[in-house]
Amino acid sequence: MQVKAMKGGYEPRSSSSCAACKLLKRRCIPNCIFAPYFRSDECKKFAKVHKVFGASNVSKILVEVPEEQREDTVNSLAYEAEARLRDPVYGCIGAIALLQRKMVELQHDLAIAKDRLARCHAANAVFSTPPIPDILPPFPDFSTTSTTSTDFTDILCHTYSSQLFTSVDDFNQIPYIF
Image (tube, rainbow, N blue to C red):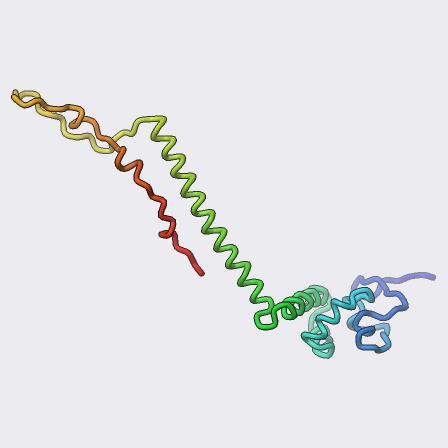
């Protein structure tokens, strides 16, 4: 017996009915619109799609869609049906919103981690090299003699310790959506 491929590149099915015809308890015809997309072992897949959309609506959708896009259409319908059965109110939108919320949380966590890493690098840089002031303090006038002793370390040295070790652990300032 010689086996030929059906139109559209699908393998011919065996003598058993497709999942749609099995569930609908009808005889599967050779040019059944459901056969290439709902194999005989995928009864649960068709049952979910049928429960949400109805067999008539699915067949109308498949007839309107170009043949090269039908398999993707059936997979989308199956995913939407499963999501709608799991969450009757929101369906796929609920799953999408959940993933978007999780993405925002992860972006927030990443921003916190990057900020902490930058502060660690800054702290390591401070301890490895002394800071260089941007603007030098005015040079003292040594020509005048003064009876008071001048502490030159206060004039010439600019300490950054008060600026470096202030705690900036307030992560509530990072904008958070949701």
